Image 1: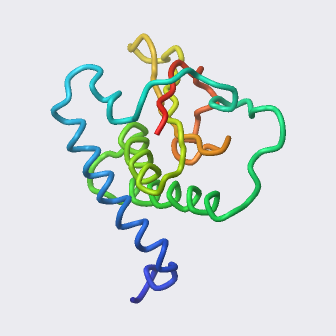
Image 2: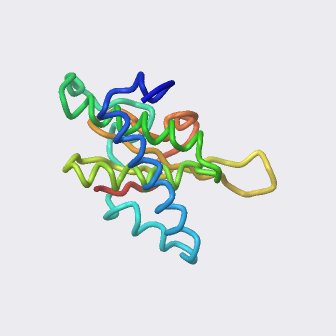
Length: 154
């Protein structure tokens, strides 16, 4: 391998390729789904919990470890792939891809849907981010300006 690929670890190369495939699958999954069926793609519906929003849960967070490194690498792969695919991969397909990649590895995660008043002609803006062990893995940019409304567990 040469160039940028040559500087990546084998694990990160595999995760980046999987993230690209998952983003494509999420995009295709979202195309024919009317209304609120996208919720099924995120996982089972749960309640919003402490740590799902910008305020961390009380107590010490998870320590560094192999699963923490893996979930962080999954987030990196999804963000990296989303920035380079030829279609628009915003927060929802990224969250769906993250949930699939986490589920495949047996890692518990939560996709959190947040809302805020819109500054455009839309009444509200929605945003989705994925939390693993109290840390935002995907969708972290700007998530603190949204109030969590509902969460979906892997």
